[in-house]
Image 1 (cartoon, each protein chain N blue to C red):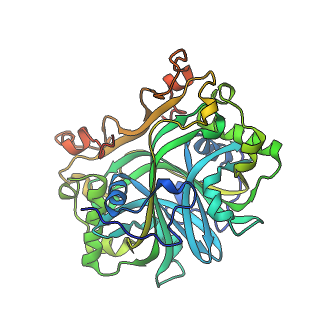
Image 2: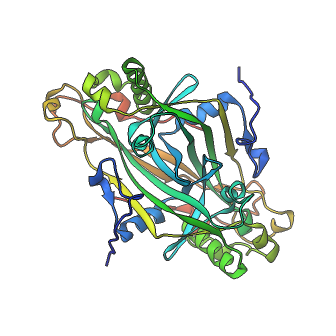
Amino acid sequence: MSENYQPTARTRVVREPHRGVYDRTEAYKILDEGFICQVGFAINGQPFVIPTGYGRDGDHLYIHGSAASRMLRNMDEGVPVCVTVTLLDGLVLARSIFNHSMNYRSVVVLGTATAVKDLAEKLKALHALSEHILPGRWAESRQPNEQELKATLVLRLPITEFSAKVRQGPPLDDEEDYAFPTWAGVVPLKMVAGEPINDPRLNSSHAVPGYAQSYTRGAHE
Amino acid sequence: MSENYQPTARTRVVREPHRGVYDRTEAYKILDEGFICQVGFAINGQPFVIPTGYGRDGDHLYIHGSAASRMLRNMDEGVPVCVTVTLLDGLVLARSIFNHSMNYRSVVVLGTATAVKDLAEKLKALHALSEHILPGRWAESRQPNEQELKATLVLRLPITEFSAKVRQGPPLDDEEDYAFPTWAGVVPLKMVAGEPINDPRLNSSHAVPGYAQSYTRGAHE
């Protein structure tokens, strides 16, 4: 069952409100399909937006370290953040320039991110992060040791205040423009995986595993 | 000729500094290949990150309206923003979990965005935005009228303070891990365009134009 929730004034979709989605199940589908998120935070009023890997474990997002470094340099407490995941599905070519658009699905999560310090939780978070990107890979890799766990920054963000925004389908022109003499429609876009490239130092007895060979991401129709 | 510039304390790449790129030509290549940017701004200390379309005209970025609406609701002056463009090129599978990574190219631009009010500049900005996404489309569309121009929010951001960050190539494992018995390498990722989908209301005398039929984005090797 999907769970609807009431958006706050900060997460209610203001522009094109009919595109707002406040259903947790729908938002999680989008979060689970993305590869990277964009972490926003502010230092002395200056916003920063840093791309980074992430994973979801239940109702928490776990954000990977490199984004955290600048953010955490001067802060040991929680940090107000915005985490945004965007999936681009197509270019929407209308008859008028004004009605050109893109098809996309995006999720915005607002809240306070805190550093994960407990090593067991950190290991669990890294597992979620790894399985999020490439299910099956964790079990076939050399596991993190204590020193590496300590060196990795992981942030936890509860998925409490969020919204999704979705645009799909054909262009929507003003009625009088439908007679304008030009092609109109959608150019679909998709992130696809290519043929895996062996590490030049690969021991040739290790074949490309199935999860890397025919990699497809939660297909969206 | 490429132009190097000195990063500021705010744009110098802190994590993995060898991946920092401060060359304007390289940064512009990345900006010109992306479809959407992520605009970061803060309201009362709470950061927001909103995906939106953009275009570049010389040393200025032009950002499209929907992102601007929340940001501009209470502000008529310039707004401190961070605009980030991220291109994902692959998943990097190392032998150790710790050295897993992604191949990507990203650009971060910091500065003060201001609303474009002059209608002639706005038209020029929208042209840059349109040509950025789909070269050739502008000339075949119904042009914006004065009412539409006034209804469209466009922000201007000078590309003054910026940095790029790039990771490419095979995994880099710790020396002792190269003997670990697993496959290692890169799963390349690429945004590709599919077969154009006609608008259901298309007049069938309009064929799919070349710029939509065989759409390829500035290929990166």
